[in-house]
Amino acid sequence: MDRTFLLVGALAGFIGVGFGAFGAHALRGRLSPDMLAVFETGVRYQMYHAFAVLVVALATARFDGWLIRAAGWSFTLGILLFSGSLYALALTGVTRLGMITPLGGLAFLAGWALLIVLAIR
Image (cartoon, rainbow, N blue to C red; front, side, top):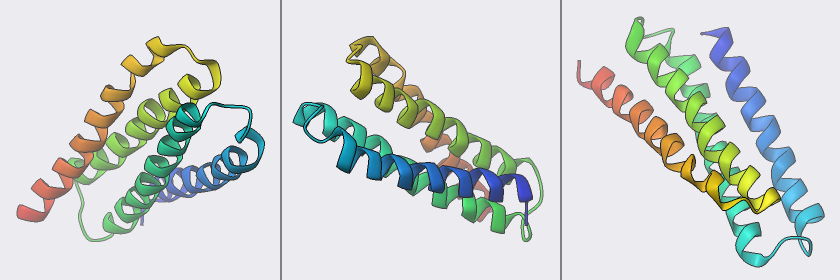
Protein backbone atom coordinates (compact mmCIF):
# COMPACT_ATOMS: atom_id res chain seq x y z
CA MET A 1 0.00 0.00 0.00
CA ASP A 2 1.27 3.45 -0.84
CA ARG A 3 1.33 5.57 2.32
CA THR A 4 1.36 8.85 0.39
CA PHE A 5 -1.91 8.09 -1.38
CA LEU A 6 -3.38 6.66 1.82
CA LEU A 7 -2.58 9.99 3.51
CA VAL A 8 -3.88 12.10 0.60
CA GLY A 9 -7.11 10.08 0.36
CA ALA A 10 -7.72 10.14 4.10
CA LEU A 11 -6.99 13.87 4.29
CA ALA A 12 -9.30 14.58 1.34
CA GLY A 13 -12.06 12.53 2.99
CA PHE A 14 -11.55 14.26 6.34
CA ILE A 15 -11.65 17.72 4.76
CA GLY A 16 -14.62 16.72 2.59
CA VAL A 17 -16.66 15.69 5.63
CA GLY A 18 -15.71 18.91 7.40
CA PHE A 19 -16.59 21.05 4.39
CA GLY A 20 -19.86 19.15 3.98
CA ALA A 21 -20.83 19.94 7.56
CA PHE A 22 -19.67 23.54 7.14
CA GLY A 23 -21.80 23.92 4.03
CA ALA A 24 -24.86 22.32 5.59
CA HIS A 25 -24.75 24.30 8.82
CA ALA A 26 -22.69 27.48 8.51
CA LEU A 27 -23.34 28.40 4.89
CA ARG A 28 -27.05 27.65 4.65
CA GLY A 29 -28.75 31.02 4.74
CA ARG A 30 -25.51 32.87 4.01
CA LEU A 31 -25.14 31.73 0.42
CA SER A 32 -27.72 31.80 -2.32
CA PRO A 33 -29.22 28.40 -3.11
CA ASP A 34 -27.25 28.36 -6.38
CA MET A 35 -23.92 29.04 -4.66
CA LEU A 36 -24.71 26.52 -1.93
CA ALA A 37 -25.31 23.93 -4.67
CA VAL A 38 -21.95 24.84 -6.22
CA PHE A 39 -20.25 24.33 -2.84
CA GLU A 40 -22.04 21.00 -2.35
CA THR A 41 -20.92 19.84 -5.81
CA GLY A 42 -17.34 20.52 -4.77
CA VAL A 43 -17.82 18.44 -1.62
CA ARG A 44 -19.48 15.59 -3.52
CA TYR A 45 -16.71 15.31 -6.11
CA GLN A 46 -14.04 15.64 -3.43
CA MET A 47 -15.53 12.70 -1.55
CA TYR A 48 -15.87 10.55 -4.69
CA HIS A 49 -12.24 11.14 -5.52
CA ALA A 50 -11.00 10.78 -1.95
CA PHE A 51 -12.23 7.20 -2.28
CA ALA A 52 -10.57 6.92 -5.69
CA VAL A 53 -7.24 7.97 -4.16
CA LEU A 54 -7.71 5.36 -1.42
CA VAL A 55 -8.33 2.72 -4.11
CA VAL A 56 -5.08 3.81 -5.76
CA ALA A 57 -3.28 3.45 -2.40
CA LEU A 58 -4.55 -0.12 -2.13
CA ALA A 59 -3.91 -0.92 -5.80
CA THR A 60 -0.22 -0.02 -5.57
CA ALA A 61 0.27 -3.33 -3.72
CA ARG A 62 -0.89 -5.18 -6.85
CA PHE A 63 0.18 -2.82 -9.63
CA ASP A 64 3.55 -1.16 -9.79
CA GLY A 65 4.61 1.55 -12.18
CA TRP A 66 3.88 4.99 -13.37
CA LEU A 67 0.26 4.41 -14.44
CA ILE A 68 -1.07 3.81 -10.94
CA ARG A 69 0.93 6.69 -9.47
CA ALA A 70 -0.14 9.02 -12.27
CA ALA A 71 -3.77 8.08 -11.63
CA GLY A 72 -3.40 8.94 -7.94
CA TRP A 73 -1.78 12.29 -8.66
CA SER A 74 -4.41 13.05 -11.33
CA PHE A 75 -7.20 12.48 -8.82
CA THR A 76 -5.35 14.63 -6.28
CA LEU A 77 -4.89 17.44 -8.79
CA GLY A 78 -8.55 17.13 -9.77
CA ILE A 79 -9.65 17.54 -6.14
CA LEU A 80 -7.52 20.64 -5.77
CA LEU A 81 -8.59 22.26 -9.03
CA PHE A 82 -12.19 21.12 -9.39
CA SER A 83 -13.40 21.16 -5.81
CA GLY A 84 -11.07 23.96 -4.77
CA SER A 85 -12.28 26.26 -7.53
CA LEU A 86 -15.92 25.51 -6.70
CA TYR A 87 -15.31 26.28 -3.01
CA ALA A 88 -13.60 29.54 -3.92
CA LEU A 89 -16.35 30.46 -6.40
CA ALA A 90 -19.13 29.79 -3.90
CA LEU A 91 -17.43 31.65 -1.04
CA THR A 92 -16.18 34.67 -2.98
CA GLY A 93 -18.65 34.99 -5.83
CA VAL A 94 -15.73 35.59 -8.24
CA THR A 95 -17.12 33.89 -11.33
CA ARG A 96 -13.76 33.85 -13.13
CA LEU A 97 -12.71 31.09 -10.73
CA GLY A 98 -15.14 28.85 -12.59
CA MET A 99 -12.67 28.80 -15.49
CA ILE A 100 -10.40 26.55 -13.40
CA THR A 101 -13.09 23.94 -12.72
CA PRO A 102 -12.91 22.19 -16.13
CA LEU A 103 -9.17 21.66 -15.67
CA GLY A 104 -9.94 19.75 -12.50
CA GLY A 105 -12.57 17.76 -14.38
CA LEU A 106 -9.98 16.86 -17.00
CA ALA A 107 -7.62 15.72 -14.24
CA PHE A 108 -10.38 13.49 -12.85
CA LEU A 109 -10.98 12.03 -16.32
CA ALA A 110 -7.26 11.47 -16.80
CA GLY A 111 -7.11 9.54 -13.52
CA TRP A 112 -9.98 7.28 -14.54
CA ALA A 113 -8.49 6.82 -18.02
CA LEU A 114 -5.16 5.80 -16.50
CA LEU A 115 -6.93 3.20 -14.35
CA ILE A 116 -8.69 1.88 -17.46
CA VAL A 117 -5.36 1.54 -19.29
CA LEU A 118 -3.86 -0.18 -16.24
CA ALA A 119 -6.76 -2.65 -16.12
CA ILE A 120 -6.46 -3.47 -19.83
CA ARG A 121 -2.70 -4.05 -19.76
